[in-house]
Length: 232
Image (cartoon, rainbow, N blue to C red; front, side, top):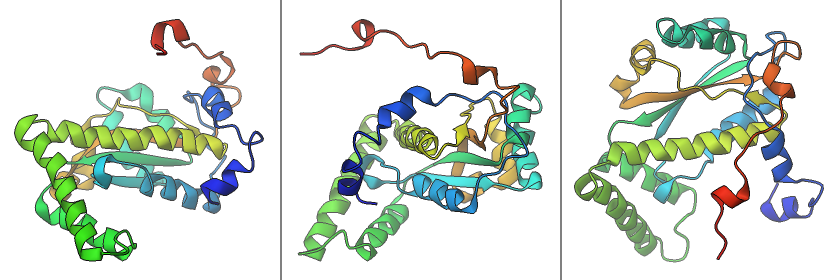
């Protein structure tokens, strides 16, 4: 569906409805599973997230099997045992990880993909060169001037997480973002650092337990506009 087609659905499709009605699920119903059709959409949400300069400095693990979820749950056992049940009872679990470095080889890989996808129509060589120069500019600023390139890449992953949480809510899927994991345990379990990544956040997804998920019935609480918004 195109953006234009989505706009024709307004006001029937109100994105703020999902923003105001989604919640962090405190208990999942292990008997309820996400359909194959919606799993495909979950993958698309992960892939098509925005990132600064389209750098896409991320990698994901999607667990659906009991074995896979147990492997992820190992990262909660020592310090965060209260998060274990959410992981093993969810339908699926997504691990969000960030690159440890962003080098020329990876930038070229992104550039090649953009060219395959037709991003440089008209004058391909010129546009391709300009795109690479612009992306390299930002990467090098964060490497050499701000010296925060790892943090910069992490922020792109968090952009993805934000879109993901809202996106699954529009599908009627519940989610629980959690930083309560031991990244080193998770990285070792899946060999992430050897692949050039490190885990940041785990997000179990599925459907809440209507009896055990107390957060599903609580009202939203947010600071008022007078506190968070300045209009000029």
